Length: 456
Image (cartoon, helix red, strand yellow):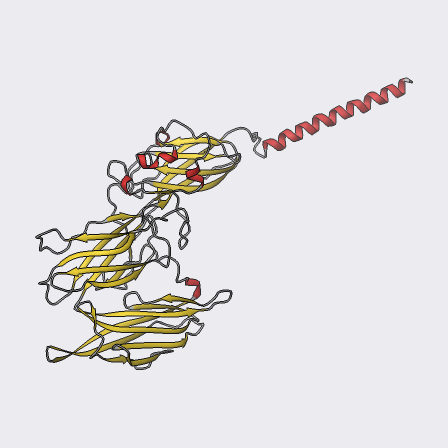
């Protein structure tokens, strides 16, 4: 081999070595990313924690839906125990953060607190629990705050159902949960938020006695099938009951006037597991002293968690019994019969057909099926026919079809004339027929700012 050939071979070998070093340097820079921080090096991130704000409504007259701040019970917002598990993309616990990592400042909806920790860049699944270390939550493995999960418990991945009502106490606080995901980057500067959701709802019942004579007292009040046995660990989509939650037969809620008491009913607020099936219907029954039969009605309402619901029951001498059906055959769906009428606002979706609304007079909670003469103003409401002489003293509003365009709310007054104690009496009732666009989705849950009003 000549000297010239030897020099050429050494040159090629040197060039190959240079290219290899350059390639390795390029790979290292790519792995580190634009910031120059290697992907396997933790980066500082900030976690913010706060209870999700509750909603309620001012309890005024029917139809007033002005939002107001929920009157928090002392246990509703405080955080005594906190467990946040951050799971990496391999399914392993990367970080377990507890209340010791935070400065919990204050109670209620404004109890926002933050903590700085270090995480590796990448996708994260986050499970958070507040005030969930009672015996009822043993399946979560949170009893010892210093222990990490060896694996995510099945109760968590399956969104298992729990009975959380016994766990709500002033001493323990209000159980809250959250499930979210993060994408942690090398340049993470915006705090990652965990918004804790209270795992139950609260009902506040008020009885407005509007009778001329209040001599006969209310002795009991029952809401049928109102109390679910349990609730899913995490909030699910409104309108879709979680198949693992609430599978046991619900029970009735009942209030009984204490023996010997003649005071007006005073019902303390109470908690209940969420009811998110939008077809839920609840029978209400009120027993009054010296009345043979209880007064009854039905209301339809979804009760999502983390909401305060004021239920106002108007006890009257005369009211309306409104029932009805319609059919809605939108593109891609089949005709479905749905109940309508809840209070004196009747809401219909645009484009529905075969609407039939039956209206009857109730006297002291009992339907009058004879000797009632009806009138309606206007006599021919838009898009409706009015039959003043339906069976069993019923006024019937019917329509073959509601136009597939949004129309303004109609105001209708129906009047019932009847004889009582030898004298002719007339009672008038205002109705509103509201047609809403399909995008409003009548099957979705009412917002927290929607009060519930019913009459007995």
